[in-house]
Image (tube, helix red, strand yellow):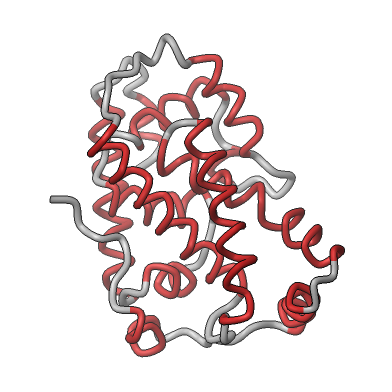
Length: 220
């Protein structure tokens, strides 16, 4: 049985040990959203759609699924904006929703639509979606890898435990701090660091089994 990605929401501040609350910029966007101002909606989408897509895609490994989940994420954000109390940053809240939606989608897929998909058949699709997922603020992870190596890592990510995959994606691809990840996943800093270490080790093991095994050493 798959482990839940998120823990007890009531323990967020105690477990994470990070400062909570929205910034002035977040507060401005939230006021606009709650007032139904169209520019606020456009700003939210412009700021978060691409990074949320990149996160969800790397958790699911499918462009169509990621697009569907991202749409659902922002629908939930818009519907729940009046109930958001500002106990975390806006990004933390949105990422938490995105991870939950990706987890729910994967669980539904396994139960109802599981089937084998060859890497050859979706090679072009993966390449296209990766280009879409990258934004101008590319992380050191993306800058250090060419397209071929990035594809190897994307494939290896899909084969490691989803709990560890989530932590690695948030840290090494989304480039979030340990404190932010602890807030998003609602676990302790120690748990975050443990998941990242175990995820990186699992990723290296997967990479050593591929032709480009030297890549595993580069990730060490």
